[in-house]
Image 1: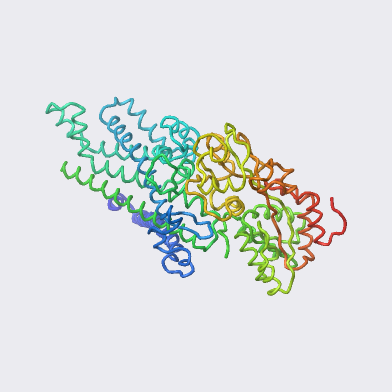
Image 2: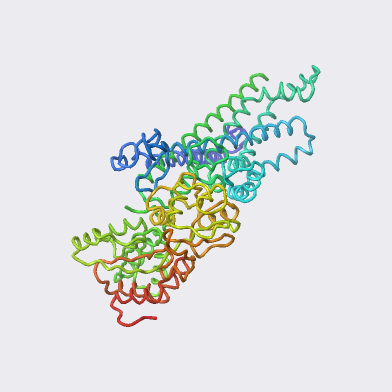
Amino acid sequence: MSTATLELSSSAVSRDRRRRIDRLTQVWVYLSAAAAIVLILLIFVFVAREAIPIFVSAAVHEEVTLETLFLPQSYGTPEAPLPYVWQPVSQVPKYSLMPLFVGTLKVTLVAMLFAGPLAILAAIYTTEFAPRWLREVIKPVVELLAGIPSVVLGFFALIVLASWIQDVFGLDFRLNAINAGVGLGLAVIPIIYTLTEDALTAVPRRFRNASLALGATLWQTAWRVVLPGALPGVFAALVLGFGRAIGETMIVLMASGNAAITSWSFAEPVRTLSATIAAELAEVVFGSPHYHVLFFIGTLLFAVTFLLNWMGTLMVERLRRRLTGAAG
Amino acid sequence: MEKWPYSQGWSLGLVLGALALTAVSQQRNITVKGSDTMVILGQRWAEVFMAKYPSVTVQVTGGGSGTGIAALINGTTDIAEASRSMKGEEVALVKKNRAQEVLELPVAVDGLAVYVSEQNPLAELSLPQLRGIYTGALKNWKDVGGRDERIILYGRENNSGTYVYFKEHVLQQADYHPTVQTLPGTAAVINAVARDPRGIGYGGIAYAKGVKRVKVKKDDQSPAIEPNMENVLSARYPISRFLYWYFAGQPTGELETFAKWVLSDEGQDLVEKVGYYPLNDQDQAASLHKLGEPGLSR
């Protein structure tokens, strides 16, 4: 662009001025990009720094060590042993992360099972089957779902969804993993839908034309040609949706019941990692072992979501190369 | 040990305090530290008191009753707020470290109600039964004289003073059963219990819309006491306690003014606004008497 500017400018003065503005703008844009990266880096550094005492501080180790965080302990009585307990406020504080891991996984799994198929099928419908006018309606409406504040979704799950799910399945607990997972799914649908839709649209028109010309039906084309072509993008959509689901806080805080139970029953309440931080950090004693454990959880969540987002981006990149490569 | 600053809002107080200090060098500074249950109450008192007496700055921080008492022992706070009474050895440590007697001042009353659904026919529970229910030993309503249904437990988050209080006074320090669903705030607990015919929850006595507050017995032989203001103030209701202020030595000057104002009708009105109970006339007079107030106050 700057060479074009050079050729077009008539006077040397204006050429210098434009070059200066060019340079300034470049620096400005560069600084903005750098600031974004530095900020994220600093956030990670500050969160991780508060987690370090878990590894090194002797005072913290009196209450909690990596073993008590991850390995089974002998809490409870010999008749009713409790290997994994999250009871940070207690005579003997107990900080097992296992109930929180199990809880997070259960809720995320429900959310993905609910949102994944729904969002992907919706995306296939809008790109391959829907008439143009309907597509113009569905797409913005689903994307609008992403704009709903999570506290509103949480409230909906807490008040409406919970009673409904309890009645339908006849569950003991109103607030449980299924309820929180479905609520969370509502927040994940627009992410998976939008990214899947993008990936499907990116599949070149002539793939479809070739398939249809060979006598395949619309459905065969969509299922056997377009979807396999966009598969890395669909995976990326699922991975990014998973990352959002793991980190989402407000919905699970309100709709999951927040009981730290280590069980694989989806009908029981769960406590997730993110909700634990949200619920406990505000009043925890600054610098206490409990405080450091919460930051340790934060660091774990940060690392996991960062990794998932990175993987997702890589997959999208691979899809782009594959499709452009195939085209060229 | 400091508290996480943002929830306390004390950083703002600190900045304002510092500004005020530079403006007026004759400022008198009062520090209040201790019980998390009492932080909001302490801050409300401080705000109104500072508006009335601009020459005094009051800083209120939490950290827990133990933290406040430790600060009193070390001489780093003027007032220790505590939602439990001081232990004998703590009183002795203050005497040893600071050569002063501890003055214990009840400043407010706190009570907890136990809620069940309005559809639940159960009318009363004893403290041992409540302990069994919340530690998971009693799992069915029929174990405590109710219907043959599973008990669904609701409670508060572990950062809550109510959580700790219930754990100390009802569970006697035993851990809650893991299936207790922890909810943010008494309103959320009431909402959950109102929608759950098998649910049980606990929280402030003042709120109880849409749920039934059961009568509580101290033990199986005691009479069942209705949870209301009258019974809390007369100390007949078993899940109630004093909230205390502790001083090292008799307070003087601004400290005395502050304490007397907190015990005045104006200070006690604020207690009710924050959601706790004011002292009854007798306790109010007794607390004022400890400050050297001769007659009965009104």
